[in-house]
Image (cartoon, rainbow, N blue to C red; front, side, top):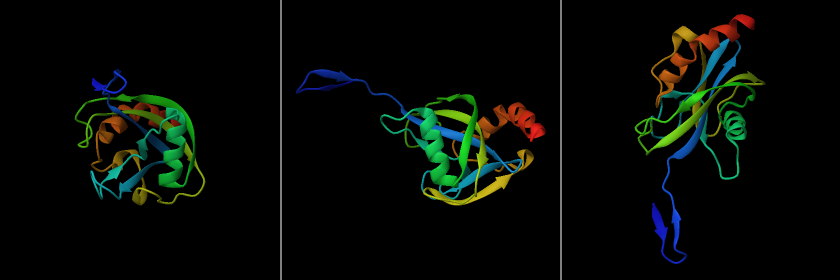
Length: 147
């Protein structure tokens, strides 16, 4: 913990909070190619940092819109991923949602490019995103069979 010496208040040092969205669109998975480091030019799930005063659900909707141009419907929480080494910038914890995308797909903000991939076509992804996709395969198969 750090202590603010003027006010003598203890401020905890905690991991940063992020969100990721595994978006199903046109029976495929939406991946963005990262514009910035870390993992520049590598594919990843759309996502980013939660802003102060924002819920993780709202952050997921915002990040998806900013990076993919899509409106999304959150289907379910896939999990919380907190391995301290998952992000080379420092300890981050991500809350990942499975979502369905609607609208016109287009790369935006931190995305250099955007592509659709079949479940069996997923390339090597940034961070621990391959693990997230692998953990979600049963959920994805179930939803794709309904679409």
